[in-house]
Figure 1: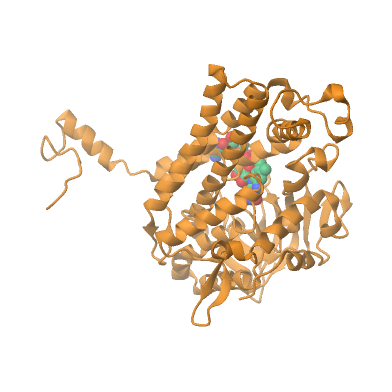
Figure 2: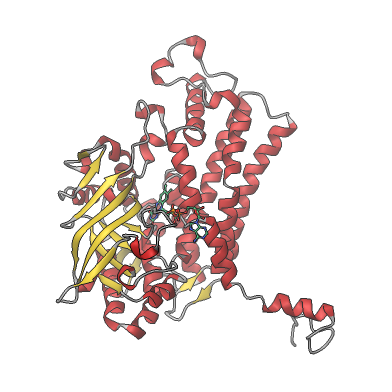
Length: 480
Ligand SMILES: Cc1cc2nc3c(=O)[nH]c(=O)nc-3n(C[C@H](O)[C@H](O)[C@H](O)COP(=O)(O)OP(=O)(O)OC[C@H]3O[C@@H](n4cnc5c(N)ncnc54)[C@H](O)[C@@H]3O)c2cc1C
């Protein structure tokens, strides 16, 4: 199976796709300065697959021929595979300090989740299950960069659900479907090869809105409209935003014909709910491993600044630094625990424990704000009052403090700006809070699936009611 290099990925983008930015059509995304930072960052990840130093991380030998395939699409079959995947996610995350969430090894994890659900889908429609398997092989074989969108455009929830024009389909005679409507916030879609469209279960979901499918980014009738760019001023003043702004876009489908073999579910609300149950398990694992790397970046930046400004002796500063370190270590502990408690699915896939991941993800979102608060609290005005390249020559504006040199300090303060205060930082915050769906619905979904039996057994036993024996508290017993 061929692996792609960065320039091959870039060449594939030059396909006349319909992308709109700031009200104008983008003639070629590869030559669009607003998109080029993220394109280069993705290309670097593809190139790294060929670096002998990282061969084991990025590739594996397949079958008797021993030909190399990419680990990005590897289906985990054991705890060992999960740990290798974790190492890959960690490595890729370090390339952007965890600020890129939709790197090429992310959406394959959603696709693997869908493949895992294919057994259940096959019970109702064998063709759809085969389509998923074939599509997975197509993406793996082409080493493709995928985007995905499940989020619908926001609507007035007070409106009757049948009046809301969510993305929907009509069947076509050849077994395909024709899709119209909008999917919102498809991260990296304008610079990806394909988009996978999913419908999350929701109250009042109508059968003609219940659809899973995938199409190439360049597809007749499909247009991407980018959100506002984030960069203010020259890219070199934004060590993160200048390189890692992965563009979010609306995906507008105007009577898009989706061939039969690209349809994974259509018109079956129950199947959508079933497939959704563990669809994002590996994606949450990715989010946790990446978020721990991002916490490292916050800690490194904050501690350097504390050092420059001679703040380390202050108790409050040390507590703030410890707070960032605790956040990162806690998230890492969730990821490790989920790896160590792998479950095997009916499809024979190894999944990090979904319950631990769900709790870990909720923890990560609930406490994410502490990273920014701690950094700003430690650095004070220097987050804001750090000169850009154009002002750096003025000696009276030299970055304050000792340690490093003037240039190093100025750059680290600019990094702090991009982590905590710039438009890029604002989008980062939004991404962490919402990229794995919203906290409220995740909390509800978690509790709906939580098995209360053991806790209730304990309560009943200690109440002296209901249990078979007074000491039947559900405690674990080691049998000889
Ligand atoms: C930077 C960024 C990148 C993103 N990238 C992607 C991507 O690549 N792919 C993708 O699919 N999505 C992506 N998303 C979208 C993300 O999935 C959604 O933001 C998320 O699912 C929440 O949906 P929403 O924003 O439409 O908010 P809404 O669903 O409108 O919710 C708004 C508020 O109302 C509350 N609420 C709404 N409905 C209910 C309810 N029924 N019960 C209780 N509370 C409710 C929510 O908890 C929330 O507080 C991205 C979002 C951001 C910000």
